[in-house]
Length: 533
Image (cartoon, rainbow, N blue to C red; front, side, top):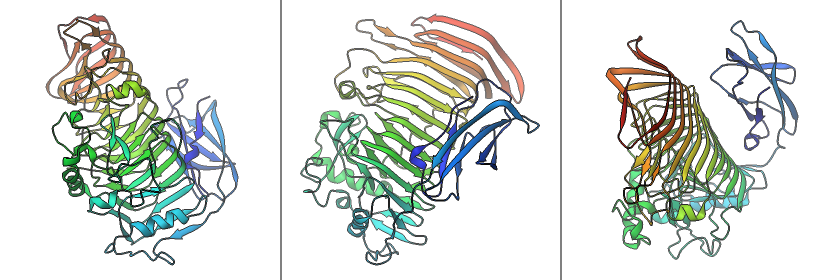
């Protein structure tokens, strides 16, 4: 028996998405079969552990069964799992290009107020639709609980930064400053930023764990275009002289952290994003702050050439799902965060329960955990991802003064550029934490690393002033195939403890060069230790 369940945030009146964990009791699963009530509706390869059931009837209960299949297509006895779902009732649809809103579908006229009016007037559970062929030009919009924004055409960001302030400050009294900018979080600090193009929720500093917005879906077959560097630079230039926290600008680029994002969720729960192409954010693409249960899948995220063009950034959030998504970004494709010292340590809200699988990452910096992780990051599961042509592959990182922790990280059945768990020297704002960061309990299983030079780097944290050391600890590398693209590949270990190596193979042009069958390294002192593979 294994875990097979519907993601509640994905249930609509006609479809829902199911996910499951790979069974650990059987190792030769060749495929999965999904049955809806009594009918077989899908047979999926072994590296696909998700499926969206479509063409369902509204307000109807269904039973789903998942079977594991052998190479011969036979079901394994007693290895099946079931779940049920009930679809939503039919709801109101609002086409914003029709009366009474009559938004210009050519994108020639700014439509922020009319689009926001349609959202505000949408009935409980209703859908606001941007239809195919329509290009809607807008500034920041605020979604509300129990609604869907469906974009089958294009939502395009205005190039005017003033369109990303609150235009009705009385309505949002207490959550924005005198310039109409809301409280947000950027690179680990809470500060006032321009609004994102799409906003869900807001930050309540008196209770950051209170959910202020829930049950929102952003979906469709269209595109969201965030305005790119042109909008981002305009935001920076205007706000540079009004920098509220100049002591936090370690990069000496005033106004850089005042930019909005493409989509922001703040203190929100049960948010579903699917089907869309997300391009040209003014900085990060999707940023989730103090949020719970966010499901993102079936997306294409493109931000090549964007300054800080991150793709998907959970920040002190929990129960997060990202799968079936393609990335080509101008920075980290995924960046898992939880605040910066000392604020992240004080707020102390970790990011935990992150499930990432079936990604195609074809450019950018790769998957990062940190460097803003002062509130802690734990329970991250990454599987069946292809990560190519990135700078860092999968990187666990923290600044030496950051504090916090990264622990219980599982990486399985992936193809990556390299793997690193180490300190970084940049982005060192704020008062140092009392303790060094901790990175521990890391598990890599059946991972292929393609590259040359240093393909694995494990370096712990040290304080030269008082000689404290926090080693990278309890790392398990099991069934790792290193495909060397040049002459050599190596692993660097410094300040490590309890490093377990099992079946590490190095190949060049499909020929086995060397192999480590089993090696346990109990401790590595301050002098670097290189293992030439």
